[in-house]
Image (cartoon, rainbow, N blue to C red; front, top):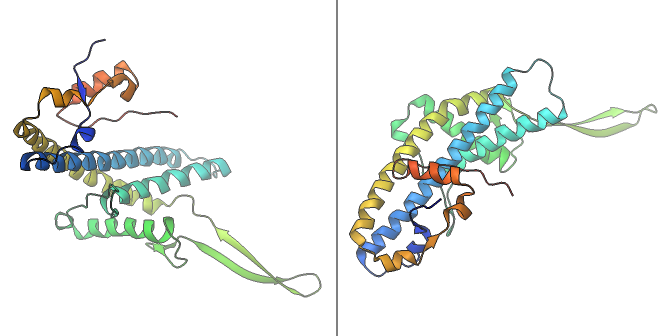
Length: 243
């Protein structure tokens, strides 16, 4: 199937620094890229929460080891993706985040947002043995001693492994719709600005054609390419790559 030409704007942006208009375009393209990537994080976090919710709602018996590992992975991934998109800073060359406008959040929403950030920072990315999610100690390690048959005290330890936490899931379910709406609006505004800057920059067809790429190679199938074409200029789209 024949498609219109696809130009790699990120590759193009690396050479846009000769005029003020091209510098502006370069900056806006990078902002669109960041917004799209952050939105993708949030949408994937939402997918994780939906699957986790279905598993815990359908729970009819205690989870076995495989299910415990699955629900823990789903919740951990969702928290990390949420915070990566909305809070974490990036070093030079890294994507970073697009932070939520806290002035638009209620007191309760700010508390939810901060609770997820603290959970990620103190329990998932690092370990603070005293950290709590609301009233729940996340990493609870018992170091104890019991006497053996000869009366000798023997030290031992046991860890309470958190698989999933209902308050955390509910917190994510409250915050993700707000964050997704915020990021979609951010993406749309930046995409519109980039369109205007691309028109103003008056880049030649010859230059644009240097950065053509094959959409099938990039997106994997005709169906995905057609879907992406239908959404262009309106919203972002996602596609899965299995490697």
